Image (cartoon, rainbow, N blue to C red; front, top):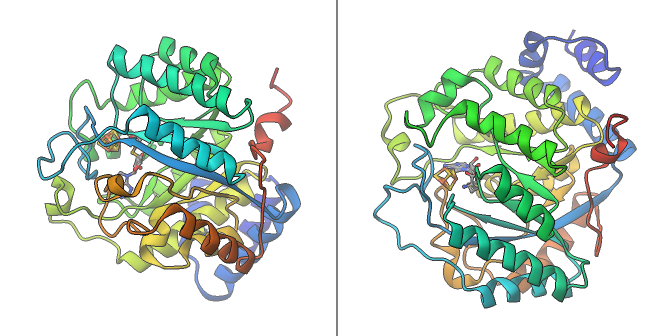
Length: 364
Ligand code: SAH
Ligand code: SF4
């Protein structure tokens, strides 16, 4: 029965949210079947290559107050920082020299003109210093269409903005009810990014309070219907200084959130065969080889952290973040081994763009 559903998904036949929800709850041989198939589909459609995105956590200043996040505005138990431009350039050049192919610039959400213009300036500089060879992904939250346009023209070509949960009611439970946290705006923003010709990635957290299997199944359907080019999903991990952490709701044990994340990745891979799927750091926070397992069963992107060490322990979105005390150089060596172990090869010096973005017949 579950195998039939999996085969139907692979054959692009119709399937329902209930079907996806059933697969998300599978165990034993069915679970192995899912992982075997997702591995096959991955190798067939996107190959064995794993692409690096050097992650630069530019600033932990944020205007928003998401209930789950450690760097939310109202967390006073946190020293705030913004990297200097020299530090950003140095990190980007580290990625370039080490043949990473791409970087991701991520931060809390700030929309001041000074912030926006500085990002533009940084983008231009990084492009120039890398002979336009370094690909740049941004993950700087919700911004205006003009801002996104300006950043695109300055050299950014991919954008990550998780919907967090595709269910409006659920979204409203996990965010404050004010103009900064509107589900409609987040959705609209994803559409604007697509319109501007960015390769767009979204995703959700897995194991959130009040989240059901149906919600997660609907999240997968949402990504397919929105025809996203990339996806980053990870387990929700508590952060002690957040409101969500004090909620009196029963959560899935952390190992189950982890297992569910692997199943979400595997299912998405068989649903959207040629997209880029990131193996997120939060997986590694739970299992030391969590990211490698995700690579084996369907993910093809890894985001090694190249933020200067002195800032690492200040960008805590959740507790137990891995690698906070490792140097970027250490991470490279261990990563190479880890990816080989997961049966992958590293796509050095390549942007590793989403094949789906180019394969789409509707794309001009
Ligand atoms: N401010 C930007 C980018 C930085 S936050 C934005 O929100 O889009 C990046 C991601 O971290 C968020 O999208 C969210 O999914 C994730 N995140 C935040 N808190 C988390 C937590 N407690 N556990 C797991 N992921 C978390
Ligand atoms: Fe800010 Fe992003 Fe954290 Fe929300 S998830 S509080 S927008 S950094």
